[in-house]
Image (cartoon, rainbow, N blue to C red):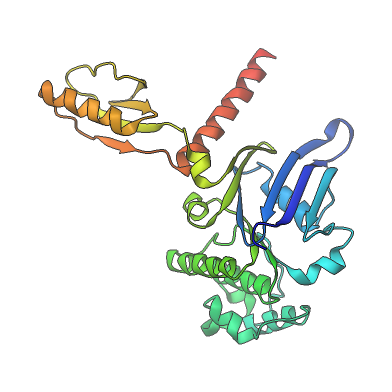
Length: 312
């Protein structure tokens, strides 16, 4: 049944090292992914995304807390879980001297119920490169072959760690379509990506991590909700009026207006300009987006950490 919990993470932490040299890469992570959902895990470099994924996949143990995938412990019950899971790591480890077809055939031999090799090569747009040795594949082609290995076993749960890094725009779009098709077929997918447009396009739910913790989560609409919009305009000859419910600051020769009601603020600004015969050049109004939320979270939390460090 759609919506049933397939991945459940409860208070999971991952600590590296020991004693004074130890540090938490992930702290108190709580996540729930329903059946057939595509869940995005976002964050800056070092936010803890890959460490989280490794524990959820069963590639490393949690220091604290619990993880369940398809109702099983991904470490203790790895043998039982493995046939139902597909994993695409950031870097593949396929033999360099085998061809793409040979590599995928070898991988298929480890799967319980693999799809036909040529069909999967076709799905990832690698049919014409099937006889090319892995060491001669481009970075984008190697990523597509990694994706082929992840899906050939017909997994119920699919983990994709930055699947479109290095792909050209056309291959990226094709990969998006393939991922969307897999989700539509009922596969539960957990995705990490640095491409925010990718997350906006594909994800049902997402979590933004920063310094090992989730700082914002929900649907894209929920994450963006109540985040202020921004209006930017070249500094006019006449000083701008005080606009209700806004904050203003200058950036070089521009005035930046932050507002929670972009339509009302823009209307007020344009009416003022018309009445005072002022030309507003360089006018740019943008509603909040996942990108603006992501960047503001990074700035906000880094600024908070710097203030704590300064007062220590």
